Image (cartoon, protein in one colour):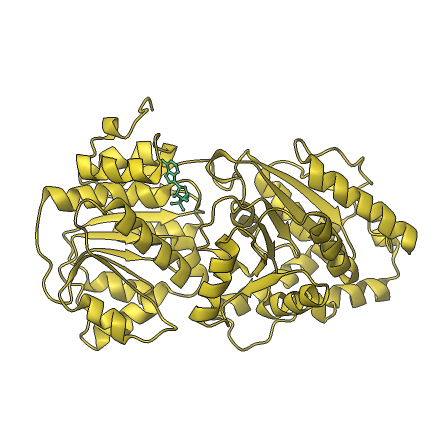
Length: 464
Ligand code: AMP
């Protein structure tokens, strides 16, 4: 694609002015690919992660389409409906429409759960051009006849894979069934498992497929490294890293809400300013945490995957995977929080014994080895199989720290996933077979944190 400027994409003056105000000069690849076709009225099937500029890739041409065909939405109606899985993402998409549509007189509203519905219903009273919504609250308001989606002209489904993960499939189908069949649909997903393709096929007509990067390829601007740390020592290791790395904006990922809260308390005790964000936090708490994280002196943000999905903060310098995720694709999403918009970032992962199979799955997906460093002091890598069977079993069953999430608040999808994966790991123990100890290669360009962590590992081992 030779497009080098937004003018070439066929956008009109009010949008170009807004883009100049945002400081955007060159379209990102997904914008260059998608905008002309959406302007032509085609359906779109986009495989793109957050951080690629996909929001503007759908918002810009849809605003343009609405300008080209002026129309007033009826009371409680909208012309464009955008569905997003989380409140954070919905809020950000809403903000993007307001920013890009600033000189075009675009009216937009956002609705999501966890807060009172009155102001959302009020915002819809006279109709809006764009409604951004999470599925549950949207259905609630439709049920109360406070929102009417029967005249939607443009429909966007964002982060379809995450919608499925979060168990929104039935809500999504109900919503789509209420939409007019004559509409333009844009469908986005960061990954393309078979269920996502099926869902896309059921709602798109002759779509143009655009892919920004091959599936699950992290940005080249992110340098990755993995450190072998016994489970019980991850906290101490994290505290040391954070103390040394007091500058920058750091997100630490935990797998569970419980784990995020516990880590938050530990960092508090260690005197490290931190904030946690996860599904059990109220909307106010989440907004406060995000505002603090965006401030010039950000606390460390501890996040679970679902809560972090919509976080759109530039200049995240480090992502720490305190625990490795079960799904390898999630690793790619996590590290995509850093190294955005051409800036460099570092992703550091802690891996204990039980997480080895997950690390292997991640490396398989990436089709490369992540530079490894350190060994587990209590159990060198090459000795895993030499452990007495009883001891291995005990380790695998695990303590509280790494796995146990309270049942409350988990989605069905979460529970299924958690029940499923460990079984799969156990069924094929040979996949966990130890690798010969590797020379710890220097992560390319990962120098500061990588070197720092290696130093800490060495110091730590001496202290044992
Ligand atoms: P998204 O993938 O939509 O979440 O966008 C990721 C980030 O890139 C956001 O902070 C946008 O403001 C920013 N962005 C989007 N398009 C451009 C562009 N053409 N030039 C510079 N930044 C952009």
